[in-house]
Amino acid sequence: MELLPITNEMSKFIERLADWKYREAYVRSSVNVNLPSQIRALRLRQGMTQRDLADASKMMQPRISAMEKPGAVKFNVETLVRVAAGLGVGLIVKFVSISEMLAWENGFSQDEFNATRFE
Image 1 (cartoon, rainbow, N blue to C red):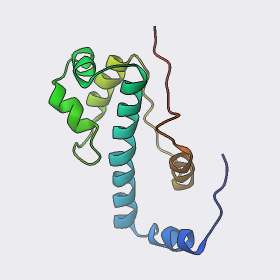
Image 2 (image 1 turned 90 degrees about the horizontal axis):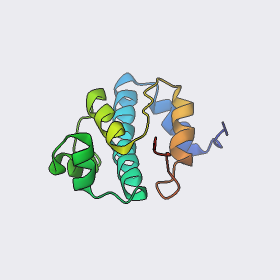
Image 3 (image 1 turned 30 degrees about the horizontal axis):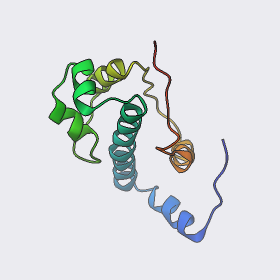
């Protein structure tokens, strides 16, 4: 894992993370942005429409549409399991250090993101 350079802005951000409410809001915000972009990226990489993914996940198309919009849905693990199954990929849910989370987010690119289907 590559360490991020500590800038003045980063230092202030780290100080704010000491506050429980700020940390909670940051993690929630991260989930609300990163999950939708992953779902959309995988769907598009596989050449699926929202309707295709909805059918494969046993959901309605408007639900898939909402899940691809940052902050529009409160995700639960069961929903993510269904989407993963529909995409033919696995799902890892794990707790990590804030620094690992930051490093992953800063290295994430929706254009490069891909997970190989089971088939």
